[in-house]
Length: 255
Ligand SMILES: [Fe+2]
Ligand SMILES: [Fe+2]
Image (cartoon, rainbow, N blue to C red; front, side, top):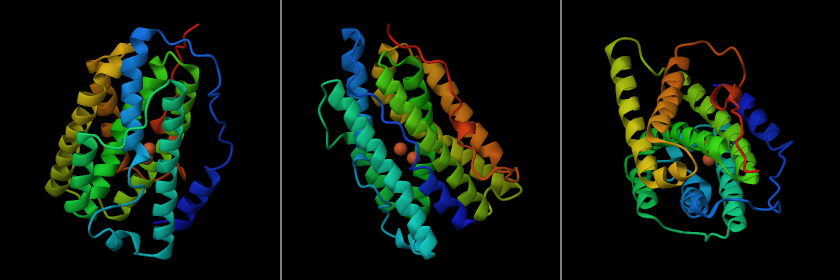
């Protein structure tokens, strides 16, 4: 694995980050505001608002492989903490509250902690993919310009994270040829749909209130996961391809 490439990427990605205009006037219809805000409050907790690090009991097996890997993991989680900061600004702008616990977040952390670091890395990879689906829908339908701009910034980072996981898995020789590779793909998709369903159970009211629907969400996460799996069999042509995961869509903002 090319460690220097990832360290350079994360350092470069700190530059040219335009902060959303949090002081812009708010024109969100009341029927949309409450459910959208509840969803963003919860997402702040899940996306970097809790422990911004690997938390599996054997996390050092992965982190301490090399000094470079330790640095990459820290840079990756620094971006996750930045997402929590951005989401916190959106919560504050829309008059919400900072929540520090939720049953789904407790279950998420428990799985990450007890099943070991390889399982935690898979859970986090799938979280990046289904969260990309969430942020793409929020960006598309958000009635608030700064929230859409925030999604744009986060999607840029998540594109890099997904590409990092692709490199990490290919370096490990995943998926292997033959039946074991197909079984790995199948379990990856099933776990991904479980993660996506967990997300949708909590965030459907928020996304539906602004115009999203169930079919669109599942189509989006299916697209993200199948594209990711397909990318694992191709040679790397580009250093990093965030645009692949975060294709821009037209913004629909309230007048
Ligand atoms: Fe994130
Ligand atoms: Fe991420």
